[in-house]
Length: 280
Image (tube, rainbow, N blue to C red; front, side, top):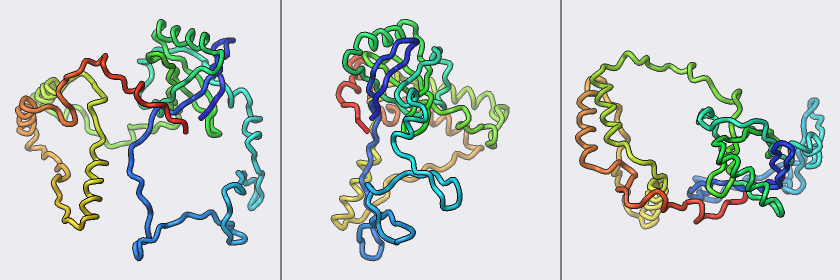
């Protein structure tokens, strides 16, 4: 989906960028309620009223009312040729210093032809130093900041959010810490301790899509849909301690929701090796 180079000091490493994530979803069509006819979204010329083919659409910036400057692909590159073709590492930091709020989307970096050795050099240097490289690059006509990290045999680029793009949580109405009692806090800590396990992401499955498919199949057969799950009701303040006690008792007898008992060692999981990186 993007090709360029990692700029590491005076070393340039040609690479290709691939999306490291994807989403599971149902492909639902938009239909007219009256006759279930599919809805088509057309791009209409506001002057002629005619539909415009995608190939005939250009990008423009309005400088005055109704007056535009048309931009072509080469114009975006000419704005800064280096930025559009390079991931420039500006500094190295400890990963612990990066607040999780900044992480936006992961990508895989693959070395281009004849770039295997400098790619491996950067990867192993990142691993040995236990640091991540902070840099910037241009994707889809916008400059982004990123963190480069060595994971296994690949260098992962994590696209980061800008500081200015994050909202201040202090604008929210949040409760102070002193409204909870020591007993309630102690119970909550015990519950956390009982439900603590080693993180195994492969144990978590998107079951909602499967349940929605069951609804679709049942409706297609004309069957009556029965509601089996209800939305959780808020715990009342007066019932908080009793609810915590009941949670502690229940957690001793069951496996945490969405998890299976530990059967495999963590070393056995190979989530990245079984799936090809998706080109966008």
